[in-house]
Length: 521
Image (cartoon, rainbow, N blue to C red; front, side):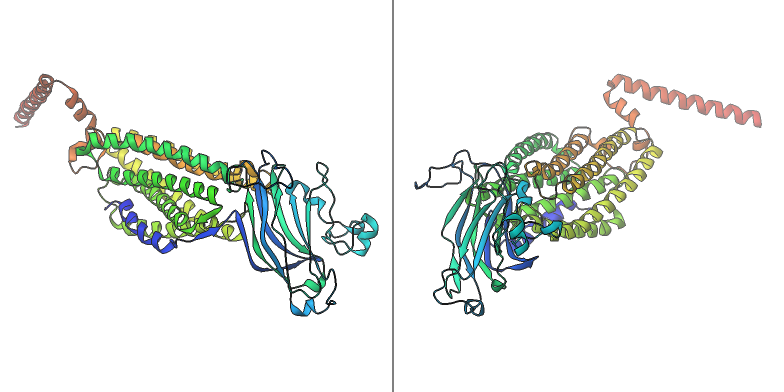
């Protein structure tokens, strides 16, 4: 069978070109393009974003110009060209010279202070906007968002007011920066409590920045992680290539596939690092680069799984090809690749918030089902291969496959345990308050895949004895591997003695047979 990884690599450039439109999608820079306000309870609102933000290392003095850069140590949310639009019918309901004809409030709050927004009259349903009953009970101002000052900082949650005047159809917020003094998961909402402003829209953008750049807080540690993983893959590549060159005459087809997986892994880690570095410096995520790394990552995961499946089936060791199973294996690989790339495009290309969307949840299911099917097929095939090796008494190959099956079992157990932890982590943190440790969820799978790849490289590394665990048609090779290995390592004279012993035994057997035949006669 031709190497599966080579076939997938042929598809890689085509798919990446189709995905790569060399423009950029704003990510830490949240864009609002006439987004409509939706009715929630007694309020009309638009979600402006949600991100983990670390505290500023310092806050610039007030009323003094400060030139902001990506690495200036500041954390802030900056409002740029934020404009609110209302209908002409809504504007005509007010006098031409009215000072205030509609209030919009911009609310910024940390997840821990979420209960400081809104109130509940007489213990009933919670309201965002102050009603007549709440105005009497809590002293809030009717027609405005209910805000209770935080225990740690009376200025938070932050509220910015914007008013329509007269019959204006639009009103713009002046450029403003809100500096973050406390590390947390911050949420931004545009809210109106005025029923006359129903159907209002908002346009403009907000820039969310951390002390070391524009990467959202959950993603920031991943840039350093991918730098470390790049170094790890470079070391693995160097060791593998050294062995590959030294024993290039004894390289097996299976080792070509392993080389392809290592190359894809190295490329993926390098591209991830540059993707995050560009994002961190500019605040914009390039669709072209992100599409490339997503395509490479999906290809690497697909080829890795097909490689493990092929090894489990005994490809290159028990059988020279996969025979009639080749089509089924490739079909499964294509299906898994499509499911994987759709999931990763949804998660990474154009991602805005630290909170995953509903679309990702829908795409996780087919990916997980395919993984479960692959695991079942892998262990079923591995069991059959071990039985064949035991029947042939292939001790060298059997030992390698036992080590491989142990490593694979540990990997599956670790995966199941981690999935359980991930479910627990997300179920117990609905508001992403533990966002600073969220990067480990993503990093674990790359570490696990790298560890299993290292095991495969160790077990099937190119060497002078590579042919001992390669498939052979020779009848006696698999049945007498240990004797053959012993003969290779024994001096020439000893080999002669062994041959002489065998010859004497043969002659003695012939004489004994003749004697027995004479007696019978």
